[in-house]
Amino acid sequence: MTRGRGITAIDGAIALIAILLIVQMWLLTATLESYLAGHSEPIVPAAILSGLILAACAGLFLFIQRIDANIRSAEEPDSRHSSPSAPR
Figure 1 (tube, one colour):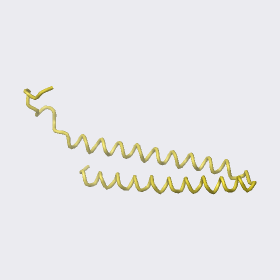
Figure 2 (cartoon, one colour):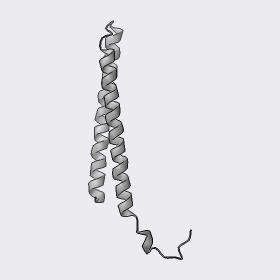
Figure 3 (cartoon, helix red, strand yellow):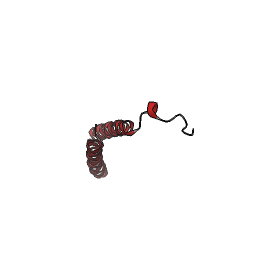
Figure 4 (cartoon, one colour):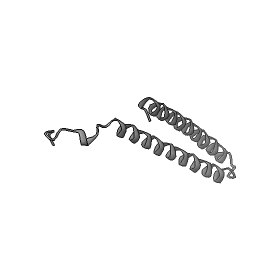
């Protein structure tokens, strides 16, 4: 994968994480407002949905780490071609 494509994929994943976090904050606000109004029914579904959003953000984070590792390994010079007199 080229560096440009990797950076584009990372930017897209970060944008998705930002959107998911905004949705999660809205969900928390709506659930808390409903609970304070005396309605306890939406608590469990909101907690489940919040857990799914957390899992999606964690998956995107792992995706970012993998793409970053691939880019960094592709940019590293091959150790076989390094000079033997290089300082350690």
